[in-house]
Amino acid sequence: MGSTGTVLRELRGAQKSAKGVSLYSRYVNRPAGRMLAAGAYRAGLTPNQVTLVSAAFTYAALAAVALVEPSWTLGLAVYAALAVGFAFDSADGQLARLTGRGGPDGEWLDHVVDCGKLLLVHAAVLISFYRFGELPSEAWLLLPLGFQLAAVVTFCAGLLREQLGKAAATAQAATAQASAAPADPGTPPAPVSRVRAVALLPADYGVFCLVFLLLGAPGAFRAGYAVLAVVHTLFLAAFLTKWFRELRALRPG
Image (cartoon, rainbow, N blue to C red; front, side, top):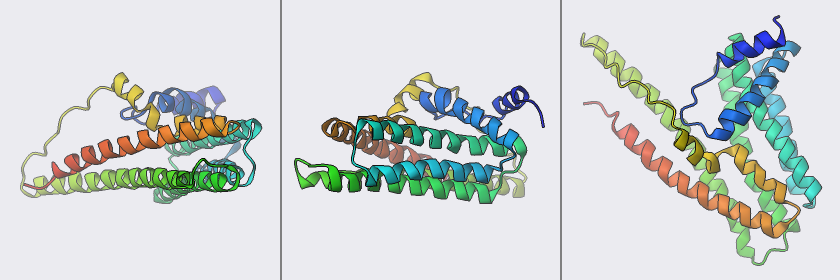
């Protein structure tokens, strides 16, 4: 087992592409995940165990949001646990690439934990609003439901876009091979856009977690949460349009 420095160098060489990644994930979450992955490697943890550690931090924080009266102390603790959980969510994949121990089971477990997180984070806010909110209107209870809808549809549609795109590319390659036609090499990957990385910041889960720092000021928390809900809904509309056009372009013939 190599030194921590050696492990970190190997992890830096095993990073996923930065394309489509916000500045927070690229410069904060991935480096934090790299440090955690190195520690997990030294401790002999498997990628699936790291995924479960991520789930433990995240779900404990969400349970606290639902069950504990909001305060500045709670907000700080919830944000810290969510941020650590998100970093471990990056660490499991990095550890899998480093050790070669990744597989369909690990990818499945990671997606299950992520899906549960997206459902529970807004359910926890809804419960907190109902139990502790002293809301100006009961209509505010609809906000977490709408935010949850936008988050889950974005997550599921993105996964489907990825899987259907891979299936279409595989089918095109098989057709080209059967007809003895040279496979289309496609266009070279576009360089990573810094403007896009900045634009994606409001949709980044790590940035979303910052709103929980406002739990000690219920009005400010509601306002920040509402703004993020609107932003995520707008991103959903943009993503759906983009992904539909991309999949339509993959039609055979």
